[in-house]
Length: 213
Length: 97
Image (cartoon, rainbow over all chains, first blue to last red; front, side):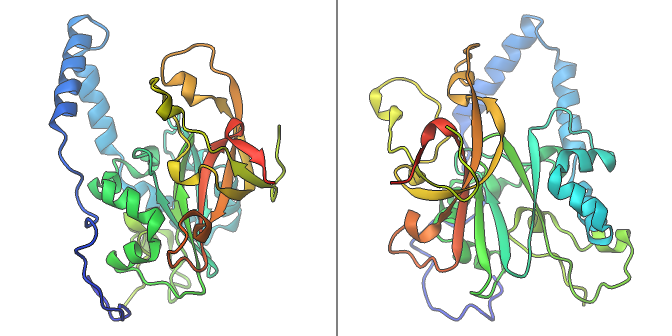
């Protein structure tokens, strides 16, 4: 981890690192058994399963980055995004018809949002695609609510104490998309250039948008 | 009961999991019995405690975003200027005393 602001000394032995989720072979067996039964009984076909996986893998954080970049340059679009993120995503060509309600949360100089699903792994898949493995790990889910600044620091994200950290636990029917702050030094940039600064983690809230060198 | 934004609410300190029946609860343990305030009414949705077990008679319930001070949720932790929101169904919320 990078850490020029990491000025306190402690060991990291007292908690699990935020990393890949632990393998659960029993769930893999259960999934296979249910899938094979559904196919054998003609409820779904193997091609349906394949197509769904292909569709899931076709969605990437690049779509979210385009939406954020549009919001940075177009205040009317940003207003629509913050009011109804699904409708705004549809405007940008994202199919959200099978998605739960999506809510966009704007980071400001006063408040930084970070999203977690403590109960499972709720994530705005229609816009960002499949969540990273660490998002589903029990370490991230448990620790983000208990020590968010420490978790952010492990991601290399250091925020002044004056900035409110708001942990958003995605417990029910909402999926949350963080709109990071537009970095300084990008005045006059077009949407494509801006979108390249918007990484996946900045839309989860574990990172900021990239500041141009 | 409906709650206006800013209303202080206490999450029911109820533990259906402990009653020995199979349940699906979307109210995290760490907010039960805790007091926060209504940020916004999100909408009205079928109760997941019914939907998760395939029941067709799931009542519609108002879902609220409730904001807590993190220091209230985890006393003793260093939680200055930190808040946490959870999305909670109306039947889990009571007006704060």
